[in-house]
Image 1 (cartoon, rainbow, N blue to C red):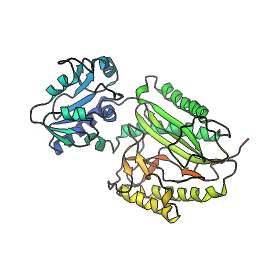
Image 2 (image 1 turned 90 degrees about the vertical axis):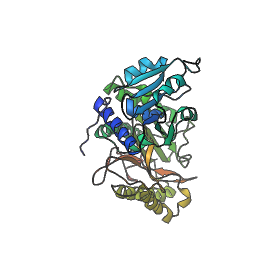
Image 3 (image 1 turned 135 degrees about the vertical axis):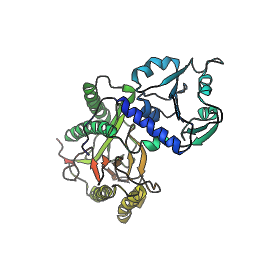
Length: 386
């Protein structure tokens, strides 16, 4: 694959191809309609980003004919400005609204009596109960999002290039005493400035990056970045950059050291890198995602870290920074070319720290290719202190 970075919105042909895939899946499942409420799936099919709240946004896809998008009246200009492709906009007055002007009044006429209607598994109960006909729970759009088009790979490559540049800049300038609030503000700002400089019409509603670090005093708790005054510490630290650039995600992370490497950190770091190498070897077309995670976890088990595992080997990246499919035990889907995963096996030891590298990795026809990059070895990731 020779994919070039892309930062512009999808052409109409890209959106049309996605809708054609949805309809092909509808034929396979004998559906007359498919209803989508998920903001991520709506963005995937329309390029319109919304935030769920009390006013419903619902996309109704018939097997034939126009796609209808049920939206509050106040959003008509916003949808018209950002959406791509043909949409029949069905607006309602407000939520709540008088009888005859509510979202339900515009929703019910979109279906023919007795229809078979596919519904996302995360559909809210109020929308699910309002759907007429026979309702079938199927995650059609989520399944289609698992294998990326060349356009999607180009968008994720672009986001990954920016994340890599800023992340490596962060590492090269890491120093004792830097606070989380200063690091987050500085490097998040770098990312946003680059994105907006490349595409001034960037959709801020679909752009969000998290840039944080954890010193070894808290890195055994990998999602705990709640203390914005915490400082980079002597010894181990872990960087985390993940997010979405105008609707398409990426992730890159490293465990690094300031000053010397504590003796007790060397073994878990080495075991983590061994597990990571195995994950790269196994995350190839044809392998089961469950098998990859099982084999990677065995590396940690053999090293005595069975009780120090907190998460799977990886997850996918797409129109979000965290989605299916998953490199996880019990998830038996087969790896296919065009899928994208984070590869991030980690080990977490209270009192010593967390040890994890993460990269965004594209599955090719014959193997895989990392879209993010950074230093890998203990030597490369040990930085002097002033």
